[in-house]
Length: 419
Image 1: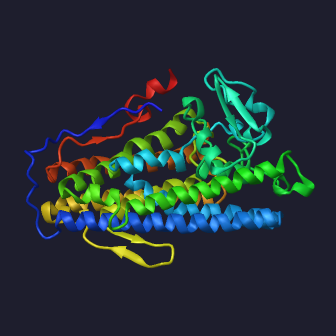
Image 2: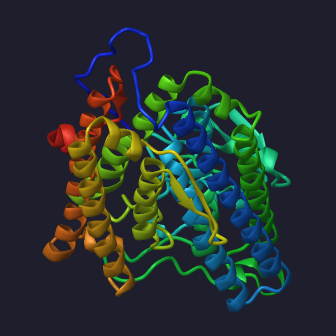
Image 3: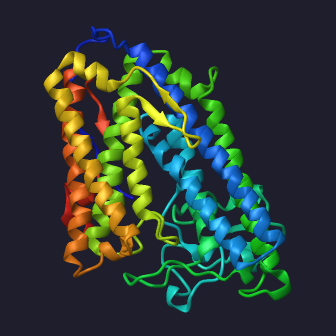
């Protein structure tokens, strides 16, 4: 998707590190890396639990084991979404992220789809390649042997043909396999794939053995990808070294990630775009109707990094020196403003989450004519935009100039969305 850079007005005053008080940049960056490590470790642990639940589904296909696998997938999303606060400012994370969380996806690449999906696309020759039904995939001069669906085959199929929508790996490929298409539009209901799609003895949907191969290979690949990112944040990891070698550059990376996720990615591409189009396809966890949680935990991740504290899935905490302390020392009034903005956005996101848990899914909230639901989503967007303005003031106050925050046509040039 097209991105527009949203650039702060602050300029770096030379190359020397700004003079800070007690909350030293080195300590802030070190704690930031510790929180990143813990978040990715929790993402890995919950992905391993998902793999175990998938093993049980494969061994004993039933409604109960399918529900258990779906529940494990939902649990795995909680720490992973919090990890998105480490994107944008860290090239190692950005280069890797598309393998695990790319969206939206053209699900016809993976498996059978409803007739309403269509049979071809002007822009994607692999639109209905249906890897599960075919042991060889070919289009546009590209041919891939998929006789046995392995992690390596899925890696070769990911974004095949240079098409970003050809998502063959990661959380959303697994989500599609566990739930199937959500054919409800802006009406109630998520995907409803039957457990018999994974039961070779009573197979529905055809090719149940290959569907199992795909699901297990995707889960194995997710685990190996997360293991890679955990290693990057260990004591001797490359990502930790990149932010730690120059603490000022580390602070720049932190604020680039917070501002870009808050503004261009979450407020813009994931929320405002779908609201403008009233399009249920423009929701992050579209097969499972879990989008409210994805948005909520993205915000939690932003707060984790800013306040320097993360609550792990086992209830323990990782906490230490924080940006919040640094801003408080530099400009107490700005620190209060930043906290108030983050709290206001949390309240708006909590209202959105509670509305979804009360029975109105996110794709219904953004539906045309749902004025109340639209307003709940817009309030969360407004909070994200507002807190980004304060983050800009933080960047200026800390003399961290030249930072480029991710933008979005949906916020910066809405008319372009309809062109």
